Image (cartoon, rainbow, N blue to C red; front, side, top):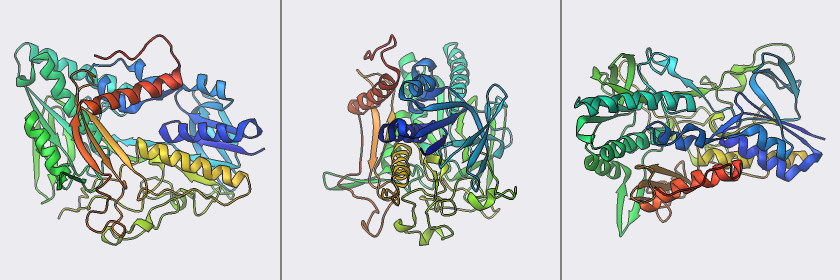
Amino acid sequence: MSKVVIIGAGFSGQTAALYLNKKLGSQHSVTVINPSDSFIYTPSLIWVGIGRMDPERTTFSLSEVYKKKGIHFIKGWAQEIHPDEQFVLAKKTDGTSVKLEYDYLINATGPHLNFEGIPGLGPKHGNTYSVCNVSHAVACRNQYLEQVKRMETGEQVKILIGTGHGGSTCQGAALEYIMNIHTDLTKRGLRDHAKLMWFSNEPKLGDLGVGGINARKHGYVMQSESFIKSLFAEMDIYYQIQSAPTKVEKGKLYFENYEGEEGTIDFDFAMLIPQFLGVRLKWINKDGADITSTVTNPAGFTLVDANYGKKWEDLKASDWPSTYQSPIYPNVFAAGIAFAPPGPISKPHVTKNGTAISPAPPRTGMASGIIGKVVALNVIDMIHGKKPSHHEAMTEMPSACIASVGKSTINGAAATMVMYPTAPDYKRYPEYGRDLSVTSMEVGLAGAWIKRSLHTMFIYKMKGNLGWSFIPE
């Protein structure tokens, strides 16, 4: 019997656990370590953050699902990985420690939210907020609704949404949040009481950390820059790009831009996505030495089968990982946000002051799920005595961003952006790096239905019918 341990139960970890359980059955052991019993359907936290969805409707119990499936569940934090001796040391939420032996390990830990990377950033200080987890989304909602109360009395407020670090990713989540605020305030009849501003580290508006998107429609090639500019013009959203925060105080953001110029922005409420780093785990070899810097990159992401060390302009599609297997420990894999990409997708920039303003590659949502499946199937190959045979690099996989503009399925809409491949491949697609017969961008009610349906089907399938149903609004 082989023992598989998975650290993390987000989209990648959950997908891997379910595939392993389904394919291996009870002949082998699958154990998941996660600090919370709740799976969070993160895309819907946008609606929680504006008070349009209760947080309970975005979660389901992991332990209930795993009990039915025969998957072992440890509620706690992995602290040390001993890859030579093949065990993980974890601390349970009840304070006790546990040693988990494994034959195969999948690191699917998701991100460490690097609020400390910018002085004053984050909900801990009460200066800025985020929608990266349930507690953050609830705090964000509460502060946003306080601004709504002010507007209801006739006050004018300044709302700042975007990225909170020069290396932040997940611009899509911030984009969706600012558009939902616009729609929510419009419905409340308060839109003229708010100045909405987008603040981002993107080299161009609509870059989204993927180098921008091009889509062909009716013989015309549209760029995501024009697409987002059009949306922002329609919604009266101001924007500042090519910038990174340097410090945040109550109601004031200090920034540096591409030219190395410094400035400030005043605000009443801010939601800024922090930088994502690798979750802090120690890797210890058989001699007791800390080998974390050997197994991970400086940001804490696990090194896999990528070609590292190239300059951005020299990166090729073949440099991206496809099996997500550690080159040092073949029985270790990293999935989703936990793996180290070979470099950025968007063109990086360093200011004259040495400040890096470069969006990191997104590895969330759809990409995480795909990678979780690939990793699980490769582990199954190895259990059956084969070499990993499943390959899907981000230069081979599609991805979709469905950014809702309100959650109503009657009069809502969503900006739907589909691209193939996720990371461009200029050898196969020399002009744009992507297949323009697949890549598309549009706004409409259909996207709102898709967004809401994905939420409902995912939660319903995992949670079962526990007393609520999909009711169009």
